[in-house]
Length: 75
Image 1: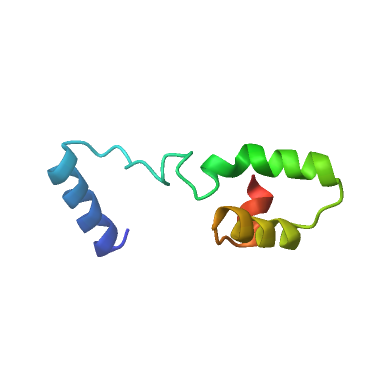
Image 2 (image 1 turned 90 degrees about the vertical axis):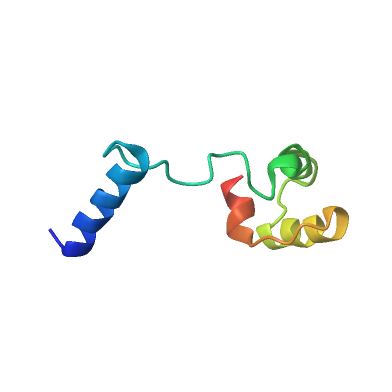
């Protein structure tokens, strides 16, 4: 074990009273596309073979949302 790991455990125990791991991530559902998922699904259903890059461009134009295509892919 490294000294940093031990210090982190001591700090965690002091702050929370427990050694249980802290929650990771943003809790889900808090991403930029939360309000646009239905629109994305409808757009894919309507156009069929739309690319991720096209979806990213349309999201920027219609919703003002700037995201990477990997973010759209995860939806």
